[in-house]
Length: 424
Ligand code: PSV
Ligand code: MN
Ligand code: MN
Image (tube, rainbow, N blue to C red; front, side):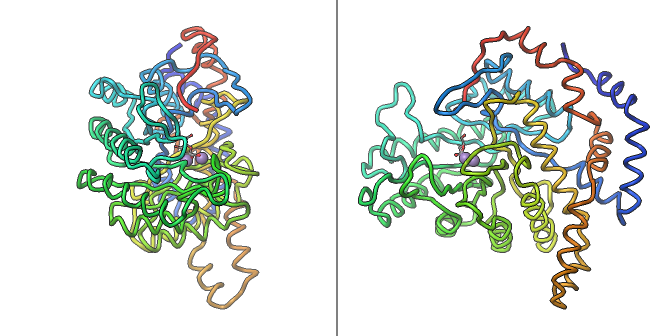
């Protein structure tokens, strides 16, 4: 089964009356509805190539069937998502899980689906077949210079792939750290990391950026060499303008005030962008907005206000990416839900009465300030998001249409029931 525009149009026509009523109800309360729709129409979130297969845990992996067996099929899956929601117009590759052997061909295939290549991600947290030295005790922070050199060379190779694909961002996450007190000299590990990053930074083309992701713990459980935003920011500041701090929502200690971190990084011009997911206990990589949608809204509230204050373009001046993956859901349905949750949080943030909020803050009117935020958060903006999608040629209800057309069943028929996509 090939998803065609007429499938989407027929489905939308069936839903048209109910949607029009819901949209009119919400839209009449929005002072500048055209502005909100335009911003929503422009917004795109990159899909990670490693989230298209069923994720596993260290206890097991239960494949759902019909998973992409090649990079080409991964691009096709993202093309499918983008056709349904018109908000997933980019793909982010993890190398060497997904090596673009024939970059011009894969780039052309992506373009056919209206997709571009977002950040390329390096991997020095796993040993690969044929690799000379092991990352068991880390990569860029390793005590052995030869291991550091190998990890640096890998990152530079990833940049080369990225150039061929038309990307302009290297996104880097290190699992480097220690499991036991005494294992590592923190200062020396940090300085070795900085020195390695300086070599990678020097190899970046002029128009490239380096995103430095931090993570509080896992797989190391005593210390992580880039454990939090302060440590990432220190590195980014020492490296230069091209280096920025990437916020993965699942990489904080419990109850961290992520929206405050975001506000300050943005203020400093050092916020790279996001890996969106949700979590309850650790780096759970749950569907975006499934656990704490209010936090997501508060993050977007800081983003909209902070980006407007700096004259930044919402859609293009930060990196927007999902980093979530599942062992119980159909990955494509999960990704549709994640993109929807992001769009909803963004739409709610666009509804915040910023002028009234500033006045309430100035007057220390705490109750009014809270009412203003919650007024926006409690507005059902789903019809606005659906309208933006409709205007872009997408489906009013992407998950419903995906199920109605039995897309997963068709993928299983085409690719088989026992398929394992590359990834974690
Ligand atoms: C690490 O937990 C991480 O968030 C990094 O972004 C990796 O690249 C990705 O997950 C791998 O799944
Ligand atoms: Mn991540
Ligand atoms: Mn993670």
